[in-house]
Image 1 (cartoon, protein in one colour):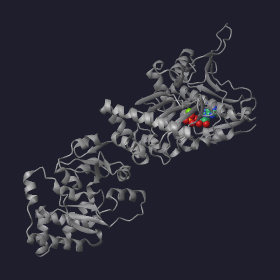
Image 2 (spheres, helix red, strand yellow; image 1 turned 120 degrees about the vertical axis):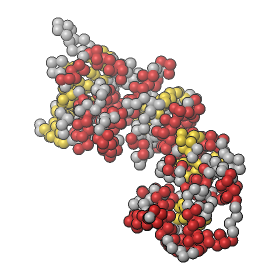
Image 3 (cartoon, rainbow, N blue to C red; image 1 turned 60 degrees about the vertical axis):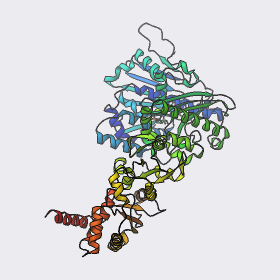
Image 4 (cartoon, rainbow, N blue to C red; image 1 turned 90 degrees about the horizontal axis):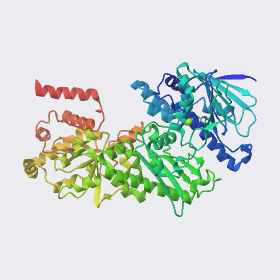
Length: 634
Ligand code: ADP
Ligand code: MG
């Protein structure tokens, strides 16, 4: 038989390097990972066996066996699950099999930049198997795939390459043998293994057995079971400890964090099922991948069916991890059949309702704690506002927003509760950065009138605001479209209010008209129009979208998504006719007109900078600015 040597995918090599240099402080989790893989392999074969009983080869008693050889210094984890063939070995134990190499490389890069090993993040990328190299200087896998005749041995020292060789007489399933590192020999101790299995793998539904090596002069003892081997979710809630829940969460999420919320319930009645769901305590990396897939495992009568069932939760709850076990679905349900199953739709409705109810309740009971959840997952949950028409209102109530009056996110109900007298709508502004928005010219007219403005900074906000005409009967309006609303609300500062009420003389109006005409000529195509502003109180100018056009922020998002799209020119420059600079410019325009054109460009560039853009021509901008400063200083 020939032995082939193959290289690990580059990402795997990098990963192994991190793993071996002890990224994980908690090395004992290697055992949880290998047992979890063995259990997955048994689950898979049990499922395949439902439709192809021949695959079971007469052995449907699944188990996982641990054994040690002290002399050789090895620990073996063997299962009689689905096993792997040559190609499986290459695909699964030579590449990053799970969540996509791209997300992984990004995380890795972030990690290298920070120079710190944030364990919780790496755990999410399916590095499970490779964690064996934390404790072993060499790992061998003897395996035969169910239904196939050739067996294989895979061997690696985790340094860039592995070998594969066809092998006679390998049992179905996989047997992973770890040649323990000198500093990890204590993992060969029976009490230690016992402890780890009890702590980490008690909930595994498949028996984990341990065969102790015979002591001198003693008979060999038979295998002994180490775990409870009953599916955790089938036990009554009051018999499950917090630690057990957390451990199970780690099992389904591949994470290391504490779950922020646990929902465990049994639905009875027309449709019976059990749900055990977790809201993570930390934000996973892959929340915003294009698939936006929910990740809940489906079981039928404790038999694992799939972890790729999009019908179990809406995608705006894709941060939730957990399992659903139903006795009402047929065991031989195919993954395709699940696509449009009315029972699944019912379960989805039930799960969604329970989760949202629980989240709302937590918001009521502990607003502070809820905000940590909101920081992590609010941007995802908000997708539901326009995707789930039925629950739009519930989701709006659950949403929290930064506003011009509050650094800490608050609910819409709170904002409605403190609306100004005479205020008829809820106002929002969209952009990238809350604190910049709070100080932007767009909102200063509102702030000066004591009107609270929602600061919407998640890209998703641009999309749902369009789908929500009102909340608690208050229309939701963009500040960009609400200039005239301000006429009816007084400024908080009485002197300014009196000033703003002063009528302009016909002569002053004439000058302003002249200035506007002059600005239009000077700026040409760079703006669609120049207008008198109602929204400005402290700044001389600002840029707004033309009525009915996309907001400037949305235009910017589109440009980011599609680099080629040109800068729009259909924007309006608004001027504040009460501002000293504008008044002086109006006088200049009516007089010799000197410097008006340069000032027009400076004002426009300044408005651009406030929108997060660059001046069109930075060199000219700098020159104009220097000249203007020179006039003031010299
Ligand atoms: P994950 O379990 O998250 O998929 P792992 O790194 O733990 O990632 O395992 C990678 C893949 O290797 C698994 O998805 C599975 O296909 C395969 N594998 C690992 N262990 C076994 C095993 N004991 N039996 C069969 N396949 C296995
Ligand atoms: Mg795994």
